[in-house]
Image 1: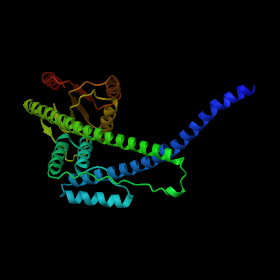
Image 2 (image 1 turned 180 degrees about the horizontal axis):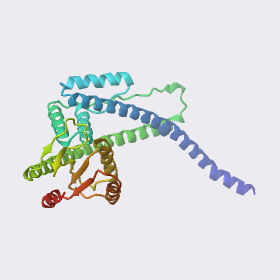
Image 3 (image 1 turned 90 degrees about the vertical axis):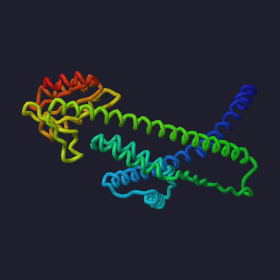
Image 4 (image 1 turned 90 degrees about the horizontal axis):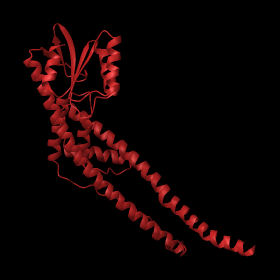
Length: 305
């Protein structure tokens, strides 16, 4: 019996010690730093959103913007939040470009204009890498027992891994930003080209075209076919038109109180198609979808409206 008890004690005592060290390291190395990092990231995210909104507002209202002005805004937010902003001015402007492109309330041509304005501004900047501020912890070695040395080594090793992962993440983000910028530029070019060809087609068919007075009206133009007015949105996308997009258009229809034509180069998703059919059954205004990249087919469908 004593032998079994001794065996159990010898087996579980080291395990208990290892578990104790693990829990100590977990709370000291992972939990607390993770909480601090999460709090810092939330501050950075709020700073980033505020900066993007301010720059968008300035560009949208066609006011002057330069590198010194942006640096001053960043410095002001850093002082206010007591947090170092981790992105360069060029990276901030790239994120602003991406935000502009995703703003569906601005016509695609206008978004392309703002994108190019920011690109010109960005290319005029001199790249200045963000300086990392390292917070060094102080230890009173005279009051620390020799057994803490192993824990300190573990902490330093873990911190080194953390810094390496952080750097890898920064490289990954930078690479992703470059890829995203290229994709955005390609998407903009295709969208502008598609819209231009549709407008050329409408002119060739001698269909009267009227541009909206405001950029926030939610459509690209209105046309008149056989004395009936139709609001038109021209959309170029890689993915099928989603049901959420159709819901947005239906909300516009309730405000515009008119017929609507959606011309897209991609097909409708099945839920989106079903929603349009349900809307047309129960409303006096009609929602017409022309979903194809074949311009002869688009022309034929416009003639048959």
